[in-house]
Image 1 (cartoon, rainbow, N blue to C red):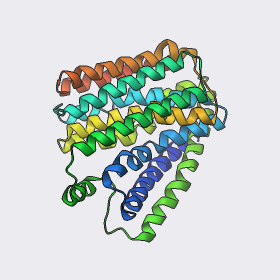
Image 2 (cartoon, helix red, strand yellow):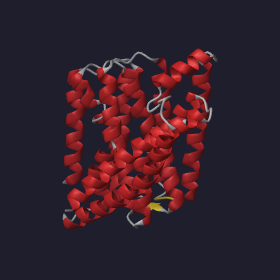
Image 3 (cartoon, rainbow, N blue to C red):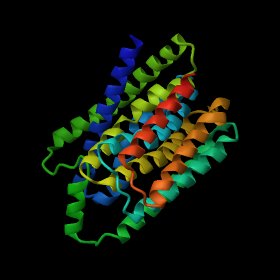
Length: 317
């Protein structure tokens, strides 16, 4: 039954997260907040809500290893699986210079996270450093995006049309319903998923960290996988890359940053020995494609997917 509860909690998380994003996006636009700011803040944080709620819930439940494993495992899955699977459908072409700049910021975030992890515990000091880096990156992204977009009503209208979840005809009562459902469903789904995952870990004699690295990480990466597959089908490779790179930065800087203020997160020695370096290696591997503008072909997609399967098998052994 714990597997059923875990699946139910995961589904509730994904649905509630989607509803929260839709409600927040439309509320922000109705209040006159520009689509650019909404896309850099509301949508970015909203799509990371499942990971954030799982991590916070895990810390409050006394299983911080699951929180850390969730983030490290999600980042690895985002690169190897979330980019690997869409490449099996169609080739992902790297053509946009902005992707390269975002990638370098992701590497900087990864290095900062690893350096802080060497302290042995992620506390409020680490959280402050991570959140400060997140604010700096958001500020840079906002000004870079604004400088590349003409300040016209037509450009803003096009931005609103492209903004996921935006619906100019959505009535106020639906906006309120979406927000309420998201705010209630997210913590409930996170609590169910964390409790069920902890029970599964104990039943199979594995640590909460391992469950976080595998089951929970894979589950909370499903929204990114769905978005990337749709972007690949629409021949929007830059959206696919941006989704993965942005998600990884928010996972490391935002989720761990906030979670560290909720409670101290001990860094499992096993994560320091193996998993954190796999995450770094996967991040550097992505640089081969982004910096050298090498397309992720079907063969590369198979290679990335196989590497992820091998990683999961290594973690479970």
